Image (cartoon, rainbow, N blue to C red; front, side):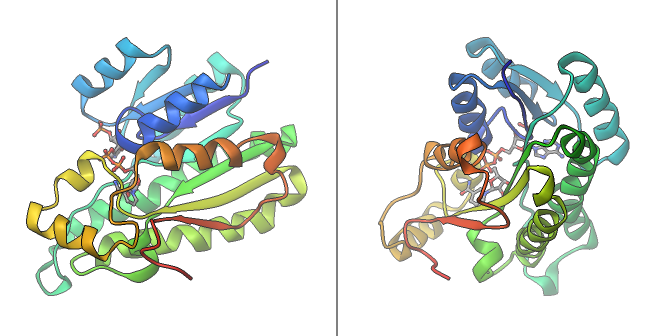
Length: 240
Ligand code: NDP
């Protein structure tokens, strides 16, 4: 039987590539999204992948959504915590609403999702959990105290989870992309984006598929000994 993979924010951008690549490789995929029905419908019309709409920053909505998915699919074997947002401002100008929104969507969501699938994974003796972080969580970025804090926090979460769950056949790993060619990056002002690309040793943006390929490997049975690791995919922009 196909393994079941839940990809949050799986209908657009990096998540869309992850959903498609897993689906092409015989995983049963559910792609979640929040509000962009048009993009989600377009995605659904082109792919045989179930889409499911809810706000991952809500614990209650997440719990209900996962219960429904479990009653349909039996279990979630693979979780890709990919949904994320930015709401930039330098800290001296940042309103609490921007801070709270980013913490809730990017960080609280990973508790909401992971805590609702982890017990079944432990009972089944198999699980793959991937967290999509960011280079800006590793190196910091002007205007992104909120975003960088959430992305750095993912690494601590992932490593602790790896320690707790490795003996149950579960792996928890982080992928930390650099600047990837998606709508999130297209929203950056053109002159700022050009100057960012100048600083990337590869002199180009990454493509969503370059992230998806790493996910595909990490969720496979072959990758069972890779745990608590972080994989930077950033064209050489930041090395640690
Ligand atoms: P996009 O903005 O293209 O897509 C974001 C996806 O997340 C959408 O499907 C969106 O749903 C979903 N989403 C947002 N908020 C919520 C929510 N509250 N509940 C459920 N789903 C939600 O993002 P990217 O593909 O660019 O980024 C994906 C991940 O990769 C993010 O975590 C981002 O931080 C990270 N990343 C991206 C980089 C880049 O260069 N693009 C670089 C480094 C990291 P909807 O369509 O309904 O809005």
